[in-house]
Image (cartoon, rainbow, N blue to C red):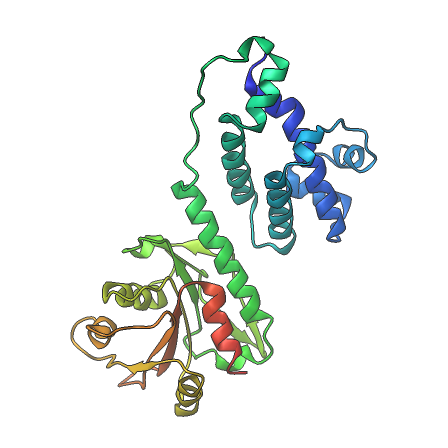
Length: 299
């Protein structure tokens, strides 16, 4: 008697790990770095590299497996995807392949008695909350990499610091918005990110994003940069609608400024300052890489 979990552990997992190890080595990671990324020993990586691990052709040649291995390897190598996100993505695929698909076929091959039997396996929710959070964090990391690799971005950081934020699809609360802890600062001409993105660590930029969403703007990301008239004019010339708001308005100034507007996918809100308030521009859009690209257009 063999359980389908045994097929996953003994035949699917070694094949997938060997494929991931190859992809990561092709992207320039050392044997030690590959071992750390996959949570295995260096000796195991060496066995994969030298073809000492048996691999199933059915798994090797499955387009879905190939696509996910490539995507996860790229995410791990670039830092856009963490181990939890990689695990979640493979868990979803495994449950899909168990449900009358590739792994079910391999299971029937190992247990011929199952052929023709009617049986089901509980499939994990492919749109689970954990998966959505990891996707949001990965998108935010991509946006951060775009910003920090852009020459001149440090010059657009206001005195209070910048932040890049992205929220979950149905976010209504600060805890559902991912951001840089402590904000991005200009340190000797370099944009410095103090830590990996987390949920619930931004109030200011996250608050602007949530206010825009409360005004029915279909946006999930925002970034703040320094304000001057030339920046606003350049953004408008590039085709982005720029909407001013009064930071000293008594209640939710961003929501009030955006109310009853037909807002585009990506737009700008700004305030020209007030007593003790630094003027700031906010770019809002569908995801972190999109708003980061808008900032790149200024440089």
